[in-house]
Image 1 (cartoon, rainbow, N blue to C red):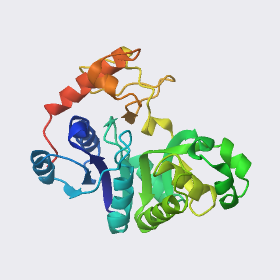
Image 2 (spheres, rainbow, N blue to C red):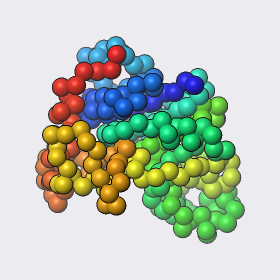
Image 3 (cartoon, one colour):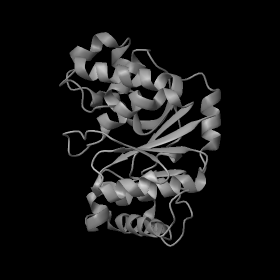
Length: 268
């Protein structure tokens, strides 16, 4: 089975991207790596090209989420070439193997897998435009959406899914709140694709950083005590670099983890 993990990043995210790739490949060496370049330096590009496929893509105008459309375009371009396509945000750290999840997903009668995200109602700016597309629209509004920071899909539907996302973005321009999660929520709600909801341990933002020894690679724990497989940096990413605000201990933990991975070799 061919497996591809895809990231996207610009030069400012390279420190995060480095830790994301190294930590994932440390525990999941059988995956091919693809990096969608939305503004890397030539030196960064050359460093990644030693072990990964690196291709240039146009960055989004949205400065908060500059990479969503590059992700969708990558899915369109190469998704069909692999049995499993996994997107990970560049601001993730991996602490274990995802083989059991990939095996369970491959055996399930679903098209995609992702962790729970924000409620669907937050995806839609103009509800009356979306309402005709989704049976049981009011019930759909109250359901949790899915976080596309960890998105696993079958290769035979990945390119088609990307095409449908792009078409929906064009048709509903100005109606949706973001480039990829909102269209996916609508396409699933409309019954065009099926989604498997997976445990938050695979895309967890609730890292108890203050209680985790930053000198270790041991996985942090969620509130219930179960280990995290993939930890996702919270939305206030600037705090990681500035050490300000109420999450300063979390920011320090992330900084130290990222610095530790800078001394790790790149995958072969």
